[in-house]
Amino acid sequence: MSGPAVETPFLDTFGIRRGDAVAIVGSGGKATLMYRLAGEAVDRGYAVITTSTTHLHPPTSKQTRGFYVTTETPDWPQLIPPELKTRRHVTVLGARPRPDKLKGLDADELEKLREVCAPDLLLMKADGARARLFKAPGDHEPVVPAGTTRGVVVASLKSVGIPLDERQVHRPERVGRLTGLRQDEPVTPEVIAGVVSHPEAYRRAFPESVPLSLYLSCAGDEESRDLARQIVAAVPGSVFEGVYCGDIQRSRAQVLRLA
Image (cartoon, rainbow, N blue to C red; front, side, top):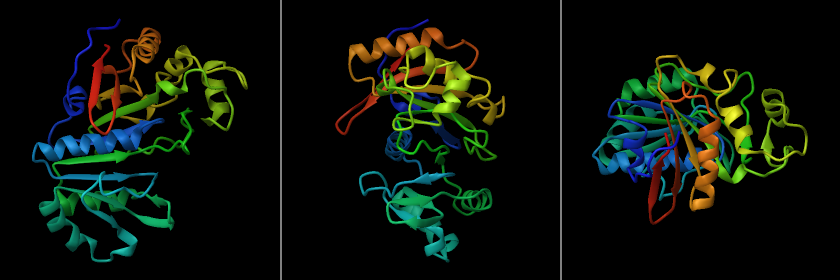
């Protein structure tokens, strides 16, 4: 079930094109992937907006070229469109409940943002994991907005072997219910596959017409790529359009095509 290792840009790997609205869900690298996709898109001349429908840490100057909080910028519908045209990439969020965490946009704000800015590419972090390495979504998660054209589920290979407890897993009781794993038992490749492909997890949040990919992050060596292949072997073939593992670093980005 695993194909050859192929190095490709992240945009091409996930089939992301001009005009797409991409919802990134899961745990263990959503924001990192989002900003990597944005950087590649800017290099291609796209005008890109990054945002969230849940929460997001404040972006750094290396992650984005402009940052706006709508509740702090009442005239944002007039300000952001020309800024986007000039800067090519801006991050827009809704509120700042505390300095280190920002609230995403609600459905109405997101619709207005798309209407007034008409970005070439919209990238959305559409799920939260409270900085845990692994999670299973709750009944109200992920928050996938109308108009989404592509979805990417992220799972970190660093979560293999961690115990099922609240310190390292978000919603551990949900993981247990979906897979049968018990408290403090280690997360295995089969458990990861069972969660990400479960019909009550991520697929239900996306319309059937929206292609969904699985991205296994932190695949920086052959050992981690072997774990990725084990996950691929345990994922039903009909759930994802493609399954990939990759490693994003400051100096390079690599995606390995697994299926």
